[in-house]
Length: 546
Ligand SMILES: Nc1ncnc2c1ncn2[C@@H]1O[C@H](COP(=O)(O)OP(=O)(O)OP(=O)(O)O)[C@@H](O)[C@H]1O
Ligand SMILES: [Mg+2]
Ligand SMILES: [Zn+2]
Image (cartoon, rainbow, N blue to C red; front, side, top):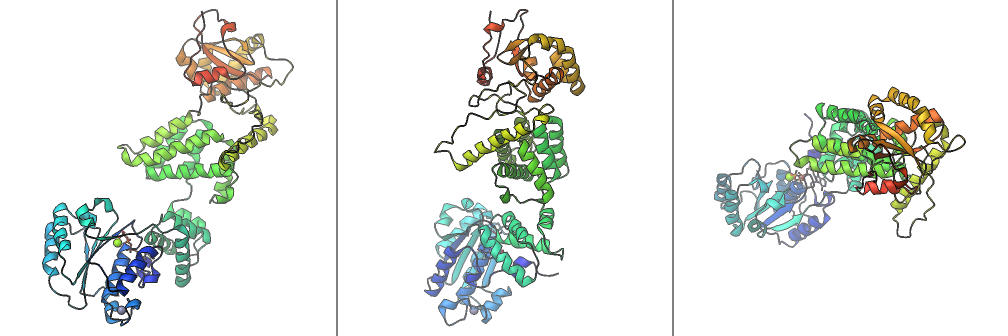
């Protein structure tokens, strides 16, 4: 079997260690000035060079090179022995598999023997946080009075699990995540030497996936290189599982089209077929983020294949900016919660369900495309992104103006929003729609609705058109439950659509609870400023006044 690339590429000299200059400089100085301490703790994320640096230090301490500042030389007998893993005075202990007191005690017993080959015995205790409390105590004794020829290097990814008593005996060095650009340039050099052909975008993807771990980056590259072909972005996405899965696209589609059952099916199918819930949530967030970037005119920052890009562009034009932001927040929160819940699918389902509810209850709907808001100059304090969002939403509004013929089949939803200009219903035939006209066409309207949704028609069946007020048709429902069922965006849209189809006139709908035979329209406060919607959003309820 060929050697894993990350082993082959283990730095053998100080300056080959990437991204940890602060640590390397200090250690190099200590070697040069012969001031190496007796106990070190290397803390930091996995794959960032802790074990590598520990071995480099062990090598430098025992290197035979006459010049202190060029240690380790990597050529002398000792350096070679360390490289080949046969240097007797370098003892590596994996605390993960030697956690007991006995292990540490036997270490302590042996520690008093002088070094066999070199100047110092170097003990590297990897994953030191795994030691038991008793083992830590035993270790502590050794750290308190180390024999002069012994040097301890403890390494851990979880420094918070190390007892303070141990910490206080060690010189601590923090290893940091390696930045994406440094990973990219290291991998570029590596590919050149290994004669691997790879697209720059694929390298970038690998570097991002590695989240700061050079070992992970090299391993991912190794995995991709095993195909023996040129590594393209496409293969990288497929093999690394970062290709936007169809499940993610379908889920977002369900949110856009308000298809609850479909959306839940997408989630369940993805999880049943083995997707990791957190990974899935992240993919959804990543995908929604791409939609946002497109809405904000930053599509060049989106990495996607041409097919996915086309999907993204289409969905970005359909998403209302406010709902998009809310949906991103919801799934992002879900991605964070999954680890702490006993039912890993639940946060996804909750996020999805919440995303189906428009940010502000759609009480009030119009067939008219969102009117160009009276131009609000972006306030001087508005952040650039807030401003572009505003532009994006205006662009969306004006683009739907152009698509007049589409409006009748898919009216853009007008959610009531106190800051926006009042929606003014547009009439396509002469004159405003009257209650008489609605009543005259009521049967046809209901038949049209029934063709598309039996349940919406059932709701209409239990409602009565009460009147027209300020350009809105008031629909009365016997109970709050029925009213609120009708107030789902899909239902409002459908009814408006069918009114338009039957009467060639557009009107918005306001649903009220009306359990009296005579509804006093005059006392109903419906104004064209969307006050009713605003009040409802604040928890108000319209009931008929006596
Ligand atoms: N800073 C770095 N510069 C260059 N290569 C690195 C660096 N960090 C890690 N690597 C690569 O990753 C491999 C593994 O690194 P190393 O074992 O030192 O990581 P570690 O921090 O000890 O990780 P863990 O916490 O998982 O033990 C090295 O052989 C090398 O190929
Ligand atoms: Mg290690
Ligand atoms: Zn040497």
